[in-house]
Image 1 (cartoon, helix red, strand yellow):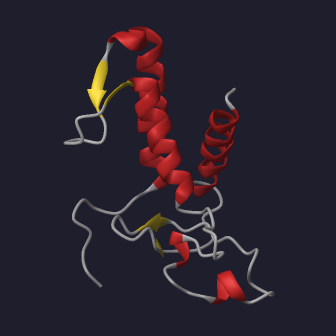
Image 2 (cartoon, one colour):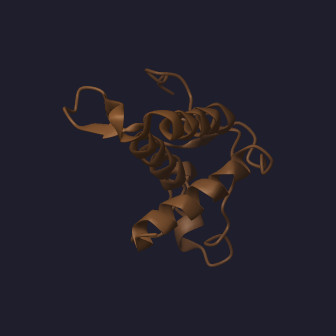
Amino acid sequence: MRVCRRGPIWFPVNYLIVEALERYHHFYGGELQIECPTGSGRFMDLAGVAQELKRRLASLLLADATGARPADGGERRFAEDPHWRGYVRFHEYFHCDTGRGLGASHFTGWTSLVIRCLEDVARARRGG
């Protein structure tokens, strides 16, 4: 397996970053704008950056139109087999390029932080 260019995705650290961005946004408001993603030429306030990170974290566990999730790493049984289709594994960490789940697949303590990300992403999509 190829080594991630930027290291693995580990939910607790990413979640702490999201919370810090949200708190700093309360102080700076829309005044402080940063480029996100880096090199894109697209600038947003810290709340927007936090929302983008939450969207990316949530996308690791959301199924696409075929039922496949990045966290499943191409394992088709989780998308196609009726006995496994609804089974979502909460991995310890994720591959930075593919999103494939790595480490233990029962880290419901730390990785369950994705639930708040999913709630916030759904709320933003509904416009509220």
